[in-house]
Image 1 (cartoon, rainbow, N blue to C red):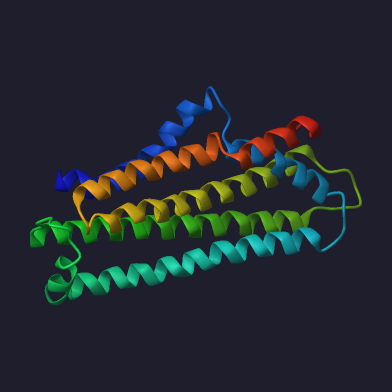
Image 2 (cartoon, one colour):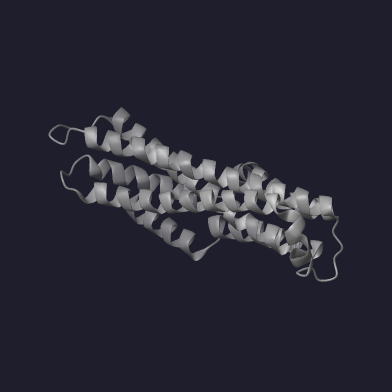
Length: 222
C-alpha cells in the first residue's frame, strides 16, 4: 500500500498521455481545440506587420520560464532534503496521521518527488525551446507576400508542441500535490492522486472553458 501510494502519482502522470489519446477518439480535448486556434493565430500573424504577436509570445515564454526556474529551485531543494534526511525525519514523521513509514519509505518517496521535479523541468525547458523556434520563424516570415502554407503549419506545430510540453510540466506539478499528501497517510495520497487525474480529465474534456472554445470553433468554423 505504501509503495502504491508513492508511485501512483508518477504512474498517473506517465499514463495520462495514453488515457488522453483514448478519450480523444470520442471527444476532442481542450488542447486539441486550442491547436486549431493556434493555427488561426499564425495565419493572422503572418498577414500583419505589428509587434503584437511578438509581445504575446514573449508573455507566454515568460510564464514558461517562471515555471522552469521554479522547477530548478524545487530540484535543488529535493537534493538538500535527501542530504539532510536523517536530521529532518523526526519533523517529517510528526506530519503523519498515524501512518508508520520506514526510513527507506521516506527515501524512496523523496526520490520519486525528485523525479517528478526533474520531469517538470525538462518539460518546461522543451516548451521554451519550441516557443523560441516559433519566435524565430515568426520573425522570419515575410509579411509583404502571401504566406506559405508549409511555413504556417510549421509555426503552428511548434506553438502547439510548446503548449503540449508546458501542460506536461504543469501536470507534474498537479500530481506532486498527491506526493505531498502522502506524508499525511497513504490513503490520502492515493485519494488525492485519483482526484487529481479526475480533475485534469474534467478540465480537458468537460469544463466550461472547453465548452466556450467549442462554441467559438463553431462560430469561426475552425
